[in-house]
Length: 159
Image (tube, rainbow, N blue to C red; front, side, top):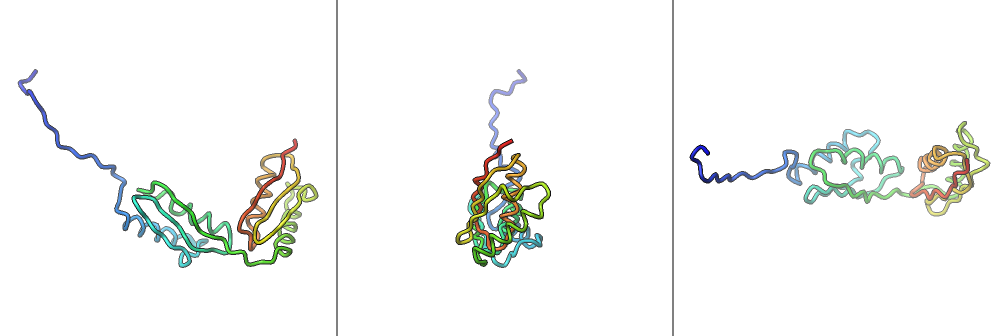
């Protein structure tokens, strides 16, 4: 229309938020260091093509979750693989007692309706509650106990 027959455009479009893996690993390390609930010296970080892998061990389940949350929203992160292990350091009977005591302190839960079984750091919750919120709360209480590495929530909601 204006006398131009061919336009050759040699543009290369790159996402603006992408960064080199080494830089992303550095940012992830700083994010862990800023989070006071994460024992950052016990966590290894590796990054490949924007995918972060967290490895190491922590004493509490909330620390594992906090580590993942600290890095998941960094610019350039495609995915996070959380391979952090929660170390089981307490005896099963002690863990069960602590969870049962914590359930009794919760006004919104009836601890008589929940059975707590423990073995090698794994807690299994059984019984029934009146709502999904109560089921989730019971699992959160169990995850917060010392030495818990995994929670199997087999509680049934019975309104």
